Figure: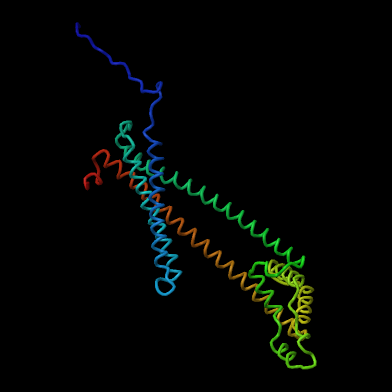
Length: 307
């Protein structure tokens, strides 16, 4: 009964009694920065290799270069997030793990959060780039509107910029070679009777008609008839041939727009698929690298044994 029992009081954790989390935000942020840096370096290396391969005389085709760039993006994301996840798992302290069985999960979560933070940052960058691209597109549309205003005011046609619409305007207003040859051979007509170049007002009006028809996927009957009259007066073609030319140019313009839209759709699908693959491989690499870093930190597990 004379023995004295000393009971140690519970030691409160530092920080005013608030327990520390086994998750380390500082390690996650450091891993994210490392992941983005390594990804940037690998992507820069791939860009340099791609530029050296792009020869006009030999080398892979544009399609193979595009696929190679997509595969390289997956490789860059995998290497980058593997590096970031490994650093985050290795830097995280396991001293606060209450259960040893939770160490594996927490190391994996540490690497996964590195991938999540990096994905959020990249998504914000893509949204910002899309906003800047939309602003540039709006500015281009404004410049096109200014050019159209210059055409309507009779300014020099050389100041206008070429576009797909300009090509189809040239195509529909192109003089008929047979008619021009007949006029040149007619000595009574002379050079003055040759078809003059269309004025800027005529080109602007034809441009508006074609743009509206392309937007509606079909020219109105009144617009088609009027456009055929303009073509007939400009080129000297008979009315039926002028109508055939207008219909032919309309079909070509519609096919060109459809082809452009199909290319944009395929490019969007290609970009979405390979973005998904790069993020998938990056997330898996970050998670596994976090586990590897934790096991090397604690000196156990298959990764530590291999070391």
